[in-house]
Picture (cartoon, rainbow, N blue to C red):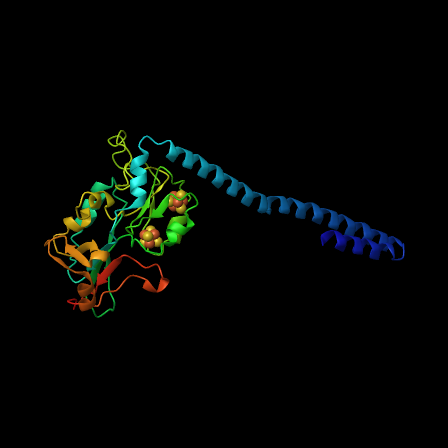
Amino acid sequence: MLISHMSTEICKLMSLNQDKTNRRAFFVKLGLAGIGSVLVSKWMDKTSWAPNMGSTAKHLIIARDAYINRIKNSLDPEINVKARQGLPGKKFVLVVDLSRCRNARKCMEACAATHQLRPDQFHLNVLEMRDDEHTAPYYLPKHCQHCDNPPCVKVCPVEATYKRTDGIVLIDNERCIGCRYCIAACPYSARSFNWFDPKDAELYKDVPYNVERNVPQKKGTVTKCTFSADCLRNGELPYCVRACPNGVYYFGNLYEDSVTNGTTGETVKLSKLLEDNGAFQLLAELGTKPSVYYLPPRRNN
Ligand code: SF4
Ligand code: SF4
């Protein structure tokens, strides 16, 4: 476009009377057009993004191949295979009773200790909520929702994050390349990036990596709640569920329609618990199909 504009301009000028004034105008315009074209070509060099897109895609493919080879040659491939399949006949659900949460944060403490988290990190966070200026605040513990339709899994370019048959969404940190697409895709802000060396890095340096427990934590990768998949494999309730002193958490199997309270040990019918208490899911309208249900803070004044 610039070149054709210049040619038109030159032709126009050449057809003018060749008096002194017009010759001067011609050379001034020609000079300006020349400077302009040099500046534009320099700008195009700097802003051309198509070659950069190509190199990013190439980089991702090379990184993916390297990580796939790495996982194939890992010392104990059986652990990763088992952790990918999930527990047969299970579809895990968590129920959180908001009317019982007193912000004791024992669940957060147990989680942080288990997953080698630094003080500034958490897999589950207890949020202070207030629906109206005239009502008292209540507390909402927020985990990864282990979505049945998880946006985080869809965007991972190396299949480091995946959903199992039992509904648990995990991250394989041996495979994660730290692109953080999954963090951007999660509408619940359930994931965080390991910007620094993990807590007690020296202590954990010889610990074999466990996908289900998500330790040792690895700098440059993403971390999040695992629903305590390592406990579930051993027939135990999750760490946070057992640590709560106030009976906030129920955990169980959707296929058996039963959940057990982590504090009282009482097992109840899941469908009845949800129906009787008007249970809801966070951002259900997004279609993510969370595996976490909340019972409203009914006793809140
Ligand atoms: S809550 Fe976020 S991280 Fe967890 S499964 Fe859903 S989209 Fe993924
Ligand atoms: S940062 Fe997330 S999307 Fe990227 S590789 Fe790791 S798990 Fe996958």
